Image (tube, rainbow, N blue to C red; front, side):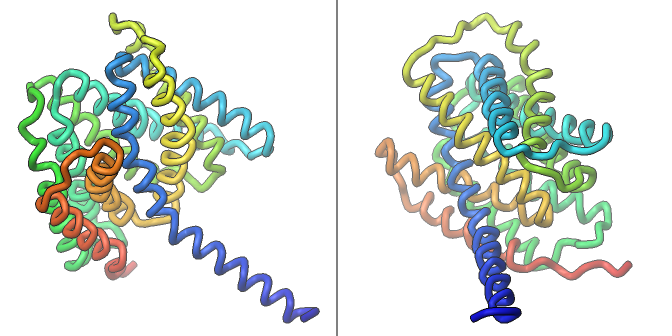
Length: 310
């Protein structure tokens, strides 16, 4: 096959590959994001939350800079884009991760923390509906959001009463929820498409600028335990370079409600990973919650909802 026919075939094959990659992105993102509990489980006993995150951001920036230098990736254009990326970095890295880590370190149970942060898809949908966005939430999507939240509740139910909930650590979890929700909506509204590597670097530098001073105030020392080193390596290479980059691309390419609904799947996948890696129990409630959450997310993602006129 030569000439125009060969060119058309090559273009069709490239389009199929791109479609396959785009279809796999949400699955890969959820699987990577679900491993965050491994980092917390192994890293938290040996490091204060802000100290750990400050080193995570520093090492991630160093790796991204090497990658950018090797690939000659383009930096964002214009001061406004740098400012918008800095805002999203403070919200989605410093605010979200800092709030969750500090809350759990202070004694908030992982189940309750997951439930609080898991409200993000519902709050995002409520905000979009209240603001009258062009792409509003359909009836099937609302049903999916409710099913996903119910499934999440079933998954974390047996852990809701673990730990010690106090106004301080619950407030930190609510701060994390507000940060990831606002960051997602802000990025979708203001951040223009740009290279994910340089965009992530700007975000991480902004998060580091906020987190580093807080780390100096912590009294707990970092212990260079093998578990901490392994958790740090995974958090940099998998969670930041992989998970955060995928989240950036998903927000850039998809509707905010559909993207945030993927967060419903993280606690169920975490429960399955804990069962596989640590032999934790996987009861009927968890399995039912997993199925309910998957069904809810499927409704949200597959039904884009009609667009508003104008």
